[in-house]
Length: 338
Image (cartoon, rainbow, N blue to C red; front, side, top):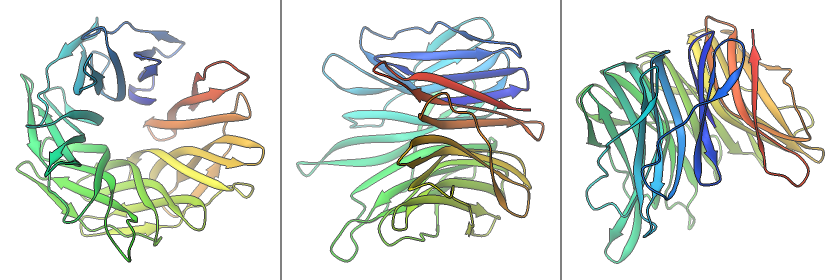
């Protein structure tokens, strides 16, 4: 699931229930389900949402047709209802998925994702971006990575129409294997450019989420292998990405950070989950300008996780995820820090 709050009393969360999207809205008192259009009688999902006001939200994902081909899915909220928007797939794409979206203004949104196509009788994966200018979506080319066997963009954050940062990961041949490496690229209003990112592990390093408060202030989170999955945090200062030390719960065997939201350079909240023999627990960590601190979070069951967080006005944050219990399907989970 993903969540975006335009104020402390207006949040929208999106996700998927079996083959249909889920959209829920927080009005300051309760969560209510909102209806969304179905492009066809096919499987569809919404992966991310970005709201600039109560009456302006954009959600992205993908839908799969009867021939099992994936296409970009974009839906727009105007304060009254959700409506479909057409976003063109990259040329030659056999399958397409939009993983994230960020809107710097009502007339400026950037979505990123991954598509695959056949190259020399082999299926290869590529990243791409889509830009909304207030009247239509246009596909943008993102830089390729030499020798990468798989490339993924997982999140994007825009502070203006001419400043966006996207993160993800890619696999490259090294030492006889294909370790996973972090990936970051920046949009300057004209083109996307790759950025060098640190990789603390020799095997597996991924960035799942990014939040920018200015062109020279971004925080990205994920995890790396050491020798199990541990929290990964990287900071962009306008010149380079550097590692930040992030704690892991004492009892955790595996730690994953999946979402981050910053309201200033000295106020960020990251969420995810930690796994131990007792199950999985929601996880939240707060950056106070000097260090990351683990916070106490609620858990409905022994199996729960946070996937996304959105913060407004300093300490006010809303996190969403899933809780698993018994033999039934997972249920949505929302928590609020005031």
